[in-house]
Length: 185
Picture 1: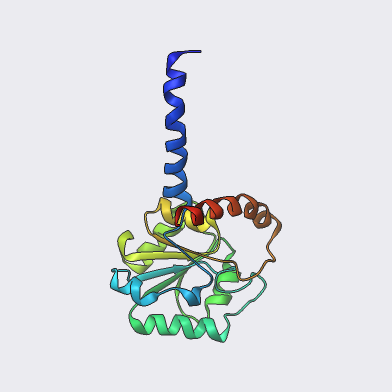
Picture 2 (picture 1 turned 90 degrees about the horizontal axis):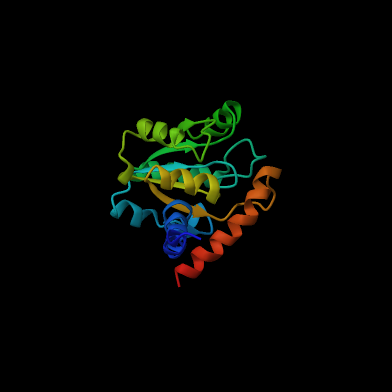
């Protein structure tokens, strides 16, 4: 084997750690959107919040936001936060869910692509350092937010019931979360 093979190997571990921390690890991990310290976010300069819908604000089969979600979004708006919904779901789902909220929104965001995040930033008229993305999935929400260089907050999913493609992603996601939690000790 070439000598370069042996010199590269120690760096692979560093590259994997770099990728995990910079792309998959959230800045914060909380049990729900109701456990986020929004006051601390405001104090740190965050002025915009991008929320995922399905399994973050509501289960994927709930058409309208709950009273609790309405209260949360209204109180955050009253505090001065600009809010945008960002979903991989279709237009009908997002428009229907957003109707009582009246937020800006992006549907078919194609997360982990950053196109949807950039569009949300444009709607909010804020820079990346002023925005937090809040969602329940490592491979869509965290990855898109980290790639777009916004503050990321991962929540536990509201429901254990997921669509089949999401259930498949939850398996490696558990490994990443275990490593993330271990790194925080």
